Picture 1 (cartoon, rainbow, N blue to C red):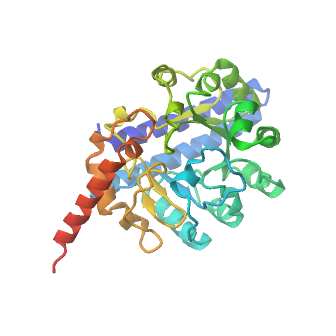
Picture 2 (tube, one colour):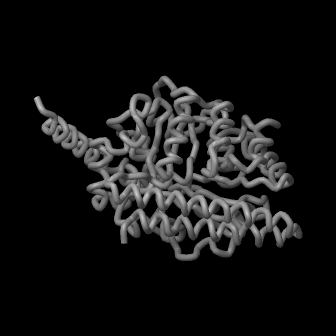
Length: 372
């Protein structure tokens, strides 16, 4: 089956199950009215996702690629200095950030094309308040925002409570793990914001980078029940990618990877889970470069994946649709079967020499096709 069809079907199942989970969680808390409201909200999201999937299918029939997910890293700036930050490691230099206006133009274009989910990351994306407020006004599209939580204030709590932007708080597991990487007090601060959002009936979630050091704790029933008790609606579990030399020891062990990938592993919990990169084999290889998702960097560079900063197109100067059809993105998609997951999460990063070679080949083919 085509990867796009599999992706859309799994996406539909995700939002339908999210509606059931939200309703059950609200009933368990003794608030059936909130459960009905949550179920209705997710049902509307599921309908929007279905509409977007039909747009993507129509584009595919025209020979165009539209991903289901756009990941936008809107800034490299951050108020923390977390150990092993992949963003600072991969993109250490300052860049000219796209303006709010240009980002919002690209986000609206993405929605028009058929993108169903806009994930906003950084750096620390809460440093771009007006951009997030603008993204919240785009009709229909789901906007999770990955944040360390330290810049959350009353206006941000109001924005998150509106339901248009969903905060995903980045932690490392329990308080000790988070303090070890992010600093003292960060974990406790996140929990205070989560408690307030739960009181308001808002949707929020957590994101954890899984390493060989924290995976056993994070995947334990004790930790997962705590996430459930806090009131999170979704938990992102992101496999560690060793982008820094010498960090290979933090890659998940085979046993931890098997535990993470176990069928129905998280079905007993009252929140949704998203595991990245997930089961790429089921999709016939890597979902980067637009097969499932694409990454938009803060300077407009369109990259195959957040963990693989390879680009030959910049959306500051061209449309998103045109950038998706760049020689490099097309070459990666055409050879996705060679990018099944390798040890260390991201196949593209682990095969970066391969990516560079196909990028050079794609560029030569493009040059050869241009009349002299």
